[in-house]
Structures are given as structure tokens and as C-alpha cells.
Image 1 (cartoon, helix red, strand yellow):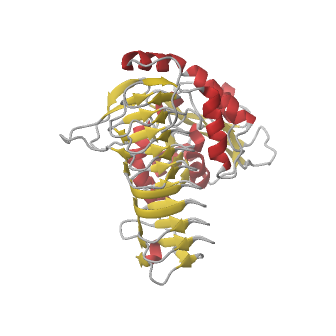
Image 2 (image 1 turned 90 degrees about the vertical axis):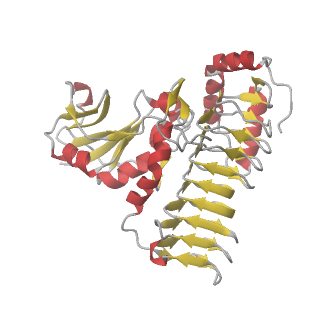
Image 3 (image 1 turned 30 degrees about the vertical axis):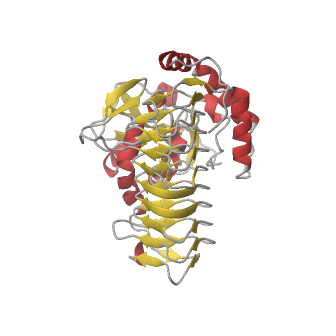
Length: 411
């Protein structure tokens, strides 16, 4: 009997907006890799299929699927991508009878069933102790622990180049990938958790990397302190970064603090862009999630920044704010609104609508700087997101006294 893994995205994905607006939930970065990658690692069976929204599937990268032929007697383990692997409920799934459904509260988190019987499975399902990423806040609060779990047992080793004057603290917990360079006076500090530097990474002088931390291939760390974070591929990061998730292909080349935040692909944070992740009264932070402002129950929450967002010099982001896909903020020195809808153009006083064609042209230029082309599928996805978020932009413009169409230049 063969077994295969099916990872699916359920209808609760809007709770992870703006992070999941363009990126399918299975492909959201978390821990050492992505939600999909973590399940492929822990399930121990080949990946058979990934199910997601049709509108984002065309723009998603193709996963490496198991080409084996499955028959009626084979078995599929179906997993909700937002569910986090834990030994308890994973063992429960493997030890359950051949046709079993698992729920956590009102959500299906997984099923074990014979091949081609997914539509025939019915019933309330067995309760399990699975944890889910219900909101973007969960990704921030649980990522450091996920990094520790993913890196547990990893042996350190240097395949790249480490300058003699660089400092490696607890080197047995530090990995430096092939073609990576750790330059003079850089510090990799693994005393509180492992540090994994992927292939082709550059760590500049006067950069401190504090574990647990993973830095994916092609990224450049250009000075400052990067602590307890997951950094995706092809980022350019400087300044102070603490307990963050960077999806990849994003820029923060200058000073400024970004903490307890999630940053989407193709984001550019201008010099001195700073997130607030702690209120002056040390109280719980309210966050914008799933269409409403909610009490997070946490005192440390930064920003949730969608893909293709641009901020100008000195942009200030309040605690728990949500910045929609494709927005452009250049009101330096003033706090941005708690919620900025997708494709908004905010100048510090008013919010207007970003022009779609101008946005797409900027996206093409930005992506070409990383040798990536804006495909027709991506352009269609961005256009659909623009149309779908129009009502919220009109409402924000009305509250802020803005007009209907942007006329200014990017800051």
C-alpha cells in the first residue's frame, strides 16, 4: 500500500490577509521553510497534491509532486495547510482507522482516507489537539518556536566562506551554506538557538545574526541586528529586525526597526521605516484581521505588510497595523492608518487610489531587478486583487478626505 500527502487551503484564508491575498496559504513562509515544506518534512510520505484557490494557483510555483500511480487500496493523508504539525495529532492521524476526519473547533484540519474517497468522507470528525494559524498574528507569535522545532538536531557546518575576524558563537549550531560569505566583523550568535545561513547568502561587516534564525539563498544582510527571524530568498536587509517573517524578494537596505511583523514579497521599506510593536502603556495590541479590529491578547505585535508594498523615507507604522497589497505610503514622520487597503496611495494626510497600470509597471521594474519577470498570470492576479479591494479604498478615501484617483509621485 502506498501513501501520499495532500495539503489543502481551506475557506478561512481571508483571516490571513494581507499575507495570503496573493500567496496561497501552503506557500506562506513559517519556521525554516513554508507551511507546505514543513508538512512534507514531518509527514514522511511523498507529496501527492496541493489544493488552493484557483485564482492564485496559476501564479504559484509548481511543487514537486509524487509521480507514482495510486490505486483504490492506497491511502491519502489530507492536511489543512494552516494546521501546525505536532507529534500528538500527527500520531493520532496515522493510528486512526482507514477513513477518519479530524477537526479543531469548527475547522477540518485533516483526514486519512483511501485514495479517491475524499468526497465520500462524512461525519462530524474526531477532535484533535492541532493548532492552526488562524490569524497573521499567530505566524508572528509562533515562528520562533517553529524555528527551534525545525532546526532541532541540525548539525552545524561551514560550506561557504567565513572571514577569520568574523565571530561564530556556539559554532556547532551554525550552518553556512555553499557560496555564502560571512564577512569581517560579522557575528553569528547561536547561543539562544541555531542559525542556518542558506546558499549564496552575503553577511556584511557589522551584522549580528541571533538565533534561532534562518536566512534563505541569495539574501544579503547589510549591517545591523537580525534576530529570531525567518528570512526568505533574495532579500536585502539592514537595520534592526526582530522576530519577523520575510516571505522573500523584499528590501530594507537602511536603518529602521521592524519587529514582530510579517513582510510579503516584493516589499520595499524606505530608509528609517519603523514599526511600533509595543504600546506606551504595555497593554495588549489590537490588530486588524478578517475585516475587523480585534484584541490580540499580546503586547508585542508589529505590522502585517502585503506583497508589493512600498514605503517612503521615515514611514511610521503603528502597532498591529495591516498594509494591503500594492499600497504606497510616503507620509514620512506621521503614523500611517491602522488599516491601509490594497492599492492605496497615502501621503500622510489623505488616501487615494493607486493607478493600476502605474503600479504594474513599477512591479515589473522591481521584479526585473531580481531577474524575475511579471508573468501574465501574476498580472491578472494583481488586477483581480485591485478590482476586489476597490470598495475599501473608496471608504478610506472618504474618511481621510482623499479623491478617487492618485495624481502624485511615489515618495
